[in-house]
Amino acid sequence: MQIKTIRGTKDILPNEAAEWVVVETAARELFSRYGYAEIRTPVIEETALFSRSVGETSDIVQKQMYSFKDRGERSITLRPEGTAPVVRAYLENNINNKQGLTKLFYMGPMFRAERPQAGRQRQFHQIGVEAIGSASPYLDAEVIILLADLLKAAGVTDFQVNINNLGCAKDKESFAGLLKKALKPKLKSLCENCQERFDKNTLRVLDCKNPDCKKILPEIADYQCQDCKDHYKSVLECLKLSGVKFKPSANLVRGLDYYTGTVFEVISSKLGSQDALAAGGRYDNLIKDLGGPSIPAVGFAIGIERLLMASGQCSVDSVQWKKIYIATLGEAARKKGFELASQLRERGICCLMEYDEKSLKAQLKAASNQKCDYAAILGDDELKKGKIILRDMSKSEQSEISLECFVTHLKSIT
Ligand code: HAM
Image (cartoon, rainbow, N blue to C red; front, side, top):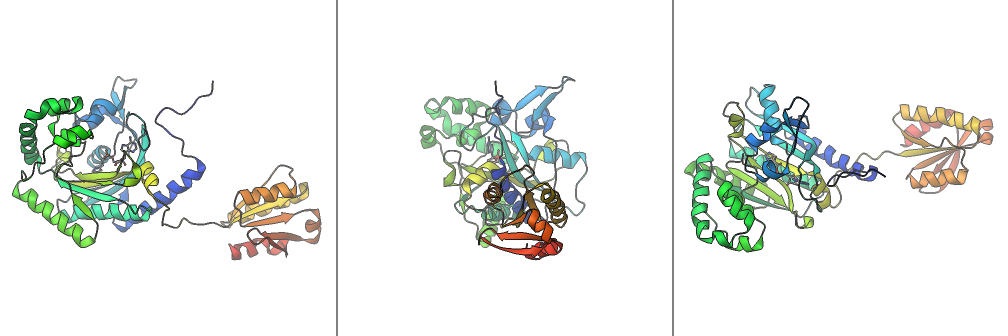
């Protein structure tokens, strides 16, 4: 029986991979403009890293982690997200930038055992940034502006930034208390999931997508301390200056426990029910919770699959290489063609050729299918004359040029 991909995973096929490269290249270029350096962390981590950061009672830790015991009976998890691994690496490798701010970005696969559907996979990919070392509201705004820039560069025009401020750890506690009080009389009308969340992680009730629950959820305002209110006000002011459109959303709480203060998500109507394109926020206590000093930080992650679903065409120009196809007839011509192909590639020119015996018609058809700009045709007659025919595929025009000048001529026109 044929073996297929595992449910919730996908092959990224050659025609799709080209688009991925465009997005990844655009992201790299943007990130370096904002001063971010790349970090690559392992795909497997100790399970405790996620239970201690994302949260023991979060959906991710409770239901979605791919965890297993390795040969040494250690509990290992395929990373469900990138923030906790980056913080672990930051602490473990002492990459604490002496000037204060450490700006890191990452790209790669994440794993969550969710029910697969359009835009929701079990292996998916994120591009994320983490700015570690400042509590300034300017940094929150910068991270959101960077995200908006990335979306625009990837051709996403239709998106909305929802933003909230959860308050500091103390505020979050009073928020949960007030919410509990407001929800208690309505508890029986909430869905089973909400009833469970009510006890385990009350704030998460606000995240319920059930329309009946949504109708009865209260909006709890004005529970933040003055510092948190001031911080939120400054972030919104900076965003206004930048022109990024945003919508304050008092019920935005996020599903990962490490957030404090600013939280945000980007949604797009192009995504259907899985409308979250990207999300992030501040996690000022996480570094301390993972055994480090008290250092504030903020970041975001965007799902690449969802980004590609939401984007029209990438506005970033991918490097367009001119492609040459060398069509040969007969063994002697094939040998010479092979030599020319190597010389072209050595000079950075993209060159394809057929090694099996095929008719000229078949080879020109292959050149056209593979979107080659030129076909160079070489048979015994041309070899004898020391010439090669160069055909411009889009104009269907051809001319003879000397074999000696072939490589330099192509270098000048590609
Ligand atoms: P998150 O909201 O869990 O945040 O994920 C961020 C993005 O990853 C989502 O908005 C979505 O585009 C994508 N995503 C999540 N799950 C799936 C899935 N099953 N299939 C496809 N795409 C998915 C985080 O992961 C935080 N670490 C973000 C962050 C960085 N906060 C601070 N720094």
